[in-house]
Amino acid sequence: MYSYGSFKDQAIEYVKQAVQEDNAGNYAKAFPLYMNALEYFKTYLKYEPNLKMREAVQDKFTVYLRRAEEIRAVLDEGQPSHTYFRPVAKPGGCETGLNSAIKRENPNVKWSDVAGLERAKQAFQEAVILPLKFPQFFTGKQQQQRTFLLYGPSGTGKSYLAKAVATEVNFTFFSVSSSNLVSKWKSESAKLVSSLFQTARENAPAFIFIDEIDTLYGEGNENEASTKTKTELIVQMQDIGYTDQKILVIATTNAPFALDQPIRRRFDKRIYIPLPDLKARQHMFKARAMNKIIE
Image (cartoon, rainbow, N blue to C red; front, side, top):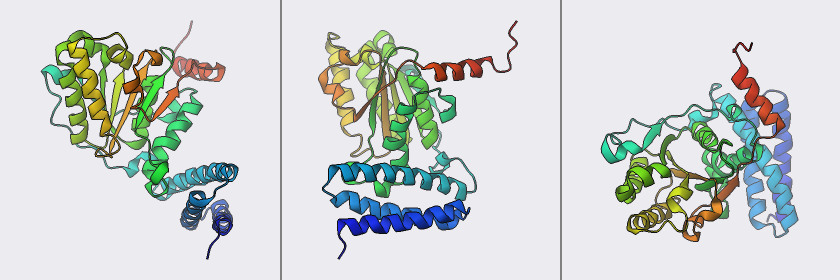
């Protein structure tokens, strides 16, 4: 009978073999060895009572899981990682009137296009991308998170990062601006929220992106139409992760504390998007100055 330690020892043995084959370029042999190691690590993490030991092994688990992902992409005829997910069919809705406020995209924003934001990208890698590609390792308490609130100053790349995540997993990107709801469709906002989620379900897997959610959901924004919209959004988000397994939601705000508690609790993860550091600013300058004549 296995003890906790024997699960870890067996995982380490598989890792040694995987690394050896990996270094030799034998990816077809390395991949199943990494997967076997991950299975043993997963069992060890499930039963190990020592928190520090679990944290140390979890870090290693993530490293090997990412390497397995990279090898899997190589084995899949060199295609990008997001090709493991089926393409989404063209939608039949979102035509005119109310639904014209909903934008549908198939974004093409790569990780490398997003300057800086390494912590945010790592958070999405661990919370979204890896669980989608290796769902067998993310069960129980480690299940994939599906609703995210990006907060931080204006112009820091929150929307751009959301599109990069959608590109990475090949999800169709449905977006709506809260300011547009408030100013243009105020009396019909609740219907638009319902339509947004329904359209995403019909075209799953899909990303729902709600920009400037504080405009719609801030405290003090109280009237009959606003109350209906808030209630509708909470009801729709309750199904995410339960009946809607292929829907992800990202919302952005510059003022997270302006949101009232009921909606804040609906987000599985809140990610801070800071101002770009020096390295990120250099990256952006080079990208925008490329192929341009500066006199």
